[in-house]
Image 1 (cartoon, rainbow, N blue to C red):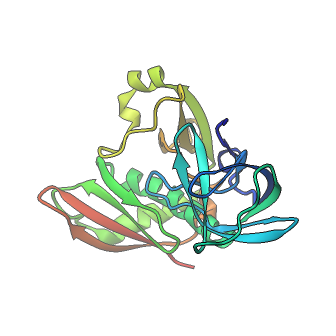
Image 2 (tube, rainbow, N blue to C red; image 1 turned 90 degrees about the horizontal axis):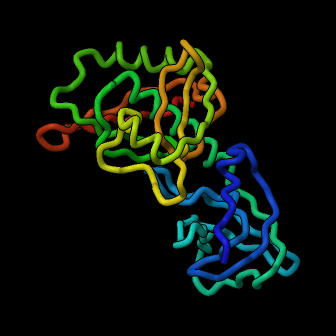
Image 3 (cartoon, helix red, strand yellow; image 1 turned 135 degrees about the vertical axis):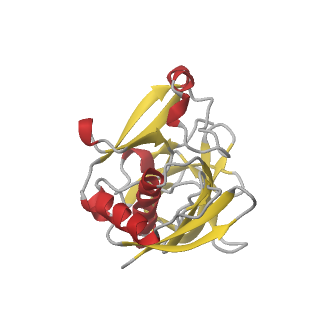
Amino acid sequence: MSETRPLFLEDAYLRQAPGVVMAHEDGVVLDRSLFYATGGGQPGDTGWLSWDAGRLQIAGAEKRPGGCIALIPAGAGVALPPLGAQVVQGIDWDRRYAHMRMHSALHLLSVVIPLPVTGGSVGAEKSRVDFAMPEAPADREALCAALNDLAARDLPVTQDWITEEELDANPGLVKTMSVSPPRGAGRIRLIRIGQGEAQVDLQPCGGTHVARTGEIGQLRLGKIEKKGRLNRRVYLHLEG
């Protein structure tokens, strides 16, 4: 069975797409997936599949061995589209778009807090990043203002690809201490925020992002919690 084509990496704004059922591997595996599969702190997409004989609600998406993505049905014992069936897949767009805004915002948070990242989680309304941060920030208001200023610059958010060897030669690109970029495919995806002299961030990432930081909107810093001797968890909220 061939790997699933990740449509979400080709166009994060795509809301519906056709697909063909390749397998039932604890879910429905299509030849191409509009659904982002859980990974890198970002939850999998939800949505639906429809075909001539039915419709199926999808509660999430997960990675499977060999580069396949399984779409997880909402509920047990539901009818699945048969092997070889032509389907239409659709995602819950509002939820996906919130994840895109949040994920790009978290990259900006790692710019205004230039410390190693020890963990993170993307949510539709609230997200977090864990930093190797022995002391809490001295001025939260200034930090939040700098974050919103970056977003308001409406910087382009683009992707590039490099080889694993190129990443090994540039270890400073990796900000995360707890999660390494996925390897084995021979190339690594980079997310770049800004271009040329206006570039503010470049790091490996497999998540979905907005096209420009102006789409993120207003952000609010939430709680900053101490997590162990050297770590602090910083929460981030979308304001509308």
